[in-house]
Length: 271
Picture 1: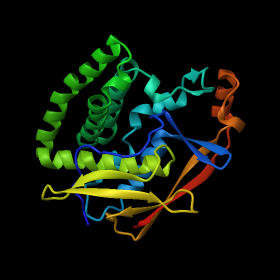
Picture 2 (picture 1 turned 90 degrees about the vertical axis):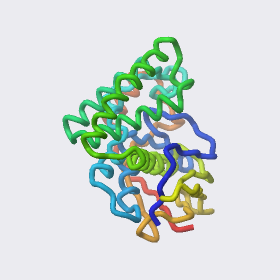
Picture 3 (picture 1 turned 90 degrees about the horizontal axis):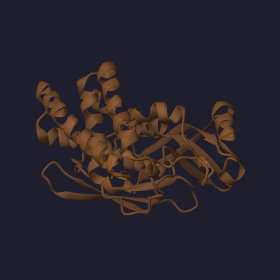
Picture 4 (picture 1 turned 180 degrees about the vertical axis):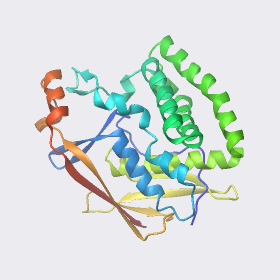
């Protein structure tokens, strides 16, 4: 059943904050998952959506955190937490130009449709999470500048691609939905939660995601929007040191260079 999802996603669950890395806990072990890896999980989800979708939309879902690639390679150390700096503690003065640069790379690498969707995804962040990122007037100005600069470019790309407003909003919302599902599967959002969606006629629906008791990182979803009756997702993570903290920045840098890679999995089944 193809769901025409709302442009915004309402997740009724606690959020640990949007980190530049995602941290997933299983027992006493904590793993760090990169944002691009989380985006790949989003892409795996959308590729099984129960309708034919443009390849450029599927690619955009897989690359929706492309702008964070450089940051992931060289994160800022937070001495208070002993971890890489949390996303919510990074102001828009830093990451709005970074996001705009990511859009430029997307345009160069994959073309205007992918760039358009990634640009709109960034705009959603700056529209919805304004107070989280406006840590100073410089941050507020950076968020405004991003929205004002990208809006005419997005409109021009949409016209050239022949994308009507309703279809563009729908494509953007599909990315937002699988983004939220992936955050749960990666351990960044807690379930149960609800995600609001609209069908093709504009009627509101709610996707309900609930954990399966006794099966860590296995969830039920209803109504079911995928072709397969069950989805097994996988990715790669790095185990955090014992206690989830680094003694200092040098220890974090050494971990970034030398930490082993481990496979992680998560499952969704029809609820």
